Image (tube, rainbow, N blue to C red):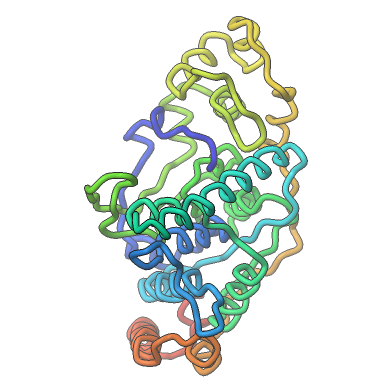
Length: 345
């Protein structure tokens, strides 16, 4: 998902950081991006997600609770930004993703029935999707944790970038690079997946560390404008257009630096896209966002969180209490109070 830009992002524009270095900073998180991470990663050996006794998926709640606690303990101020109505140009991408997930779900059931557990787990991850319960239950948990939830009118990443540009957040937080195209001055990656992670399709592991990508340094190092960065995305392919077959980030960068724009590069290649590049560019430069939001951190409802996770969704009472107690201790150490609001101000 998202535009593939990693190959052209210079090391000088990226800073490896620790979670502790973000103490006191507000990060506007792409909620859907994070929820997809959790329902993809947090699964059993056979690929099944965590569920409560009523068969409701709880992988997202587990990830959201325990990982967010880790952020709060080091003083990070998370803001969760949820997607609204997708742009019309994204319709084809959404339909294609739904089709791929449906096919993966069929392959998962077949592999599971035939005892091919490793393949089943791979297909299960590919079939992961969000539904209304996952979205609404995550919002309920965040509300109980006293954390701000912002509902975007359209793309969550665009809204998160808007918060960062306005100064209501220090940075956007997402795994996708689209945030940079939307104009976020800083993109924090790997906040929710820090630690040892298995490489897809391989029996190898890597240590994942959080990092910040600075938009101004990126543009300066590449010698391009933000509009030209968007044009590189257009040639490579975004959620709004397929891009040019065979053109990767490095080739796209060369084309844009040589010709100046996606339109001129396409003309030089003798290629065309299914959509007008100017429409895609406009979606990144002037996305649909709202100023009607509130960013406020409130005191956590400890009893409410425990009741939801343990009473409604069968979480281990011992594990939840341990995490909540650790948060209380962190709050007391930081400010001499258990008030989340005071601690995060």
